[in-house]
Length: 396
Image 1 (cartoon, rainbow, N blue to C red):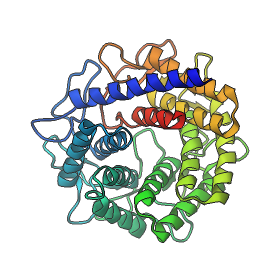
Image 2 (image 1 turned 30 degrees about the vertical axis):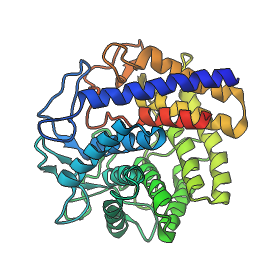
Image 3 (image 1 turned 120 degrees about the vertical axis):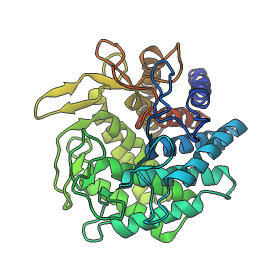
Image 4 (image 1 turned 180 degrees about the vertical axis):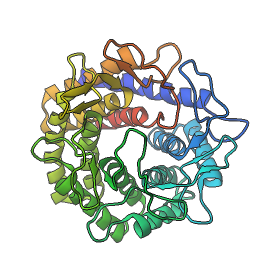
């Protein structure tokens, strides 16, 4: 077993370096600053493409986290670049918060305040604060935290509303992307908000912040986790009425380990035990979407009995961590094997052996999904970098 784990860790260490080397080599925009908004599967950049706050924030987090774990100084330089661009071009100095996107020259393109985007900024900034030895990142992170609590927090029913105009008016169209339901509260935003808050708590253990993290965990336990099926409910109205039956296997397996980690970061023993139990239930539910080849299918619609027969890259990365987490809870080797099988699937079908990084995903016949770039508004070094860092850390 020790040799098995050592080999797994070594492979992932190499992959971490490969992923971040790709981003350092092909995505840096030397002409206009920051990073390109789009790079295709042949590593050709689109220098005119807009730049989204999610991409820039996730780059900041990935290189900061990699530096914090490896102490590779090159990672810190790239993190510094991401931080500088975010501070210079995405901060809304008039109304507070951050823009959703800027054009290729760094000018505001979409000034909406999507809470999902603010959350990822907090996630990246708090990680960079660790990397910069407490010199940079905290001030902006706290300003974003205050704006979220001021405008987005539902004091009556708990949870957070999705999106606002530039001047913080609740929008009619709240959707994070075109495929989402237009509802006031979503699982996805709450998952990444608690992730950001827990990361901030590590460097700023404020009592009120800790209270909000606990309340978010209780929101997941009360509303978002379907305790009958083990799956996550994706969309809600403001009173927490369920508005979707769609099952997202990737979000299931991601939440399984991430919610437990958030409880651990605030050191709440009662919630840790609750989240460990939930982690196993959610993990096993996510495995309903596991194919015999080790890959995880994308989504399932029970109402139509319809499976989206695609295997996107990010759910495979989350399956590596979620399965490893279940193994650590139970010491059941089957979970460890599933984690390694996810990695094997990635190596065989998702990793671009010619041009580097990971493809967006593959179809049922393993053909590369068309029309999906390797770098884009949503395609970032986040899930795969985090999977590598978590596996390395958990095997150490």
